[in-house]
Image 1 (tube, rainbow, N blue to C red):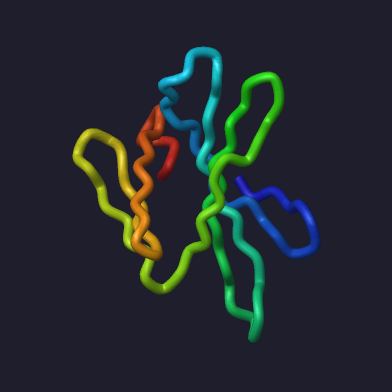
Image 2: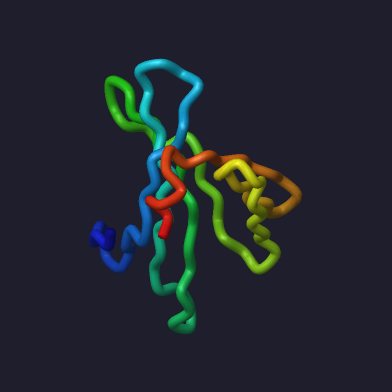
Length: 95
């Protein structure tokens, strides 16, 4: 998935996540753009869809960002001392 929105921002990946809230759909979206000195910059957006779509999480991907697989199809993202856990509905959707 590579949709263009805004000047130079692109959606690189959108993955549907498991949700503990019935009737609510959650997505993790990777957005990239060209930043200063032509370097690619990325962030992760957590989007909740219920009656309308809302952005519930914005994580900038920095040099200290670490991604760890947890063994049951989920993964965690650690950045700036914070850890966020995600579980895709399908691991195959990420590849």
